Image 1 (cartoon, protein in one colour):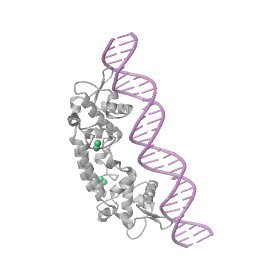
Image 2 (cartoon, rainbow over the protein chains, first blue to last red):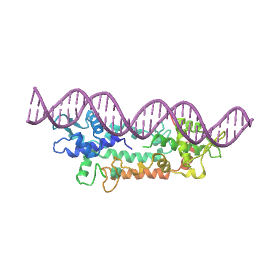
Image 3 (cartoon, protein in one colour):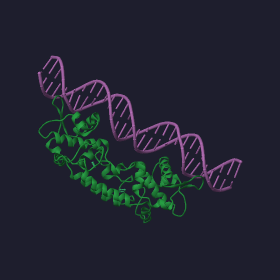
Image 4 (cartoon, each protein chain N blue to C red):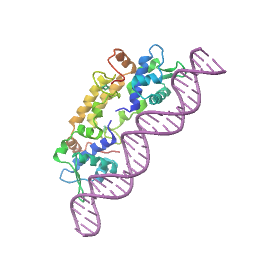
Length: 144
Length: 144
DNA sequence: AAATAAAAAGATATTAAGGTCTTTTTTTTC
DNA sequence: GAAAAAAAAGACCTTAATATCTTTTTATTT
Ligand code: FES
Ligand code: FES
């Protein structure tokens, strides 16, 4: 569904939001541990997100990552599009050159509904939405 | 969503069903052209499907691929599972080790609904369903 | 039997994703 | 100012997906 990079990005951002509420910062190492992801890989992804101002970073001792107020209201849709591009939103599910009503693939009509659901899910969920959920202890960023 | 292989497989099977109604067979070359897929790649995928008896093949002049009566009633779900495995049906969408109600990821609940839709779409559509649709000329296996 | 047409099999190549390691830069603390 | 801690940058490695090419086997047609 999503690329690994994208999965890590989503979990990392949720983790950062969750653990920097009081003006603290979290290091790559912490994020990697907290989301069960390879440290150096997550570093690269955060670098990318940082360039796009989706997460803030400060170097040096006591540095790390944190979110600006606005960053907390970023939707999953935004993250997915930044990392994986908009293929999932526009491509034909059977790989036709274009997805259109004019020359639709056999599953176009039915897939359209599925896609609508998926997109709604991505649009309606922001980083901060998850924080509330995580606080309740009923959701996890890693398991097993 | 699906791998290339899987996309090609689905389109190839639909194409075969569509073009062998009268006891004819179609060659790899035809299938590749008809579905806008690389010939040798599609050959390998059909080989695999052939081993699994999801499509029949006959060698030699006048040979080619065709479907047994039963093959026409194969669902997309079956094809996807044979080619891509059941990851899409069982894996956590954020990549947690397991997808479970016990230790769900933050989007588990919402994604569950999306997944249900997707699976229903895959289960409810068989190769022969598409033939009827294609006959009407309103759907395509390639475009642009 | 020879020629031919087709799939099967298998070897190889290419590309992209995923992952790791090393060096550099920045900042803080002492 | 030196040492340390952190991210940034970049080089590199590994694996899997995608794709192509070549050879072999099988069946048909003449
Ligand atoms: S044409 Fe295939 S999903 Fe729209
Ligand atoms: S735990 Fe993530 S989808 Fe179920």
